[in-house]
View (spheres, rainbow, N blue to C red):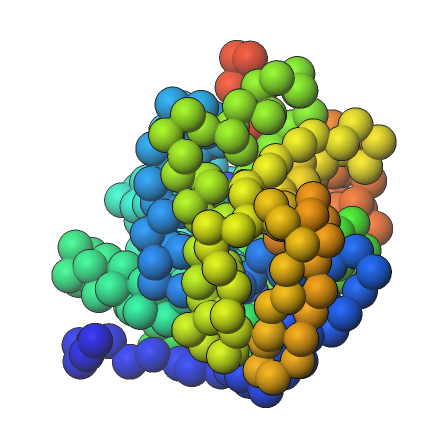
Length: 321
Ligand code: SAH
Ligand code: AVI
């Protein structure tokens, strides 16, 4: 795909390190893969379909919170900020901010899913010609640099919607918040979407939709390993499973082997017993107090919290302490 109008800042792609991560995960007694491998072009499109599912409440709830409170949010951010978005995907929620923010210095979407990011950046640049759009293709868990906007920003606002923070183990989530603290710089802030603890049935429905889109999204990881890491997973021999575990407070997504089988990845053979699974994703849910404690450990103070009437989801504005 060619994206001539927009310059992409490509950073830290390392397929050897990715393969190593895959192999290390599959060598564990409890096999595990990291959710960043969901997001090739097909995975990004499947995620977009998930966001429209009736059972998947987070996207529409977060959008409603943003729309409801946009004037207050814009007032807190102030003029001439640089908006740096982690895991921007299709930048759907960002449009609400881009429409309302006062003289934005630049919009810097950061995402690992290259073509999807560039297509979204091109569309935004056409829609908002007065805003400098500076897409960064990077794995945000590894060091990366941010491009310098033409207009000097008055402050940096790190935007991290979608509750993607929940896809990281608590230590890694805190480490990521610390990176955001650094990127926010002095006087900067973090605007973050955080999914909240709730009734197990609502959570499990959201990750086991009746149309089977989440199952396709989950299985797409194996398709990707077949395409990119010389693996030979038979997608018909694995099943999607998503369950909520109370004690860590997270949805776990697994791919369960339906029979005893062997699979090879880049020449290394892995054995699966019948019923053995690969954990592909954790989606942690927080109480407001739990998230506040983690944000504080990373150097932020939670300045403002907006939720929906049912208390399903939160958007939080955090200042550097
Ligand atoms: N922010 C959007 C998309 C959330 S899906 C929303 O709220 O709907 C998670 C996004 O994070 C995907 O676009 C995925 O490609 C990106 N992502 C996941 N892990 C990443 C990583 N390690 N580095 C960069 N982007 C990542
Ligand atoms: C991107 N992330 C916050 C989603 C979530 O809800 O954890 C990914 C997802 N997995 C299954 N459905 C959606």
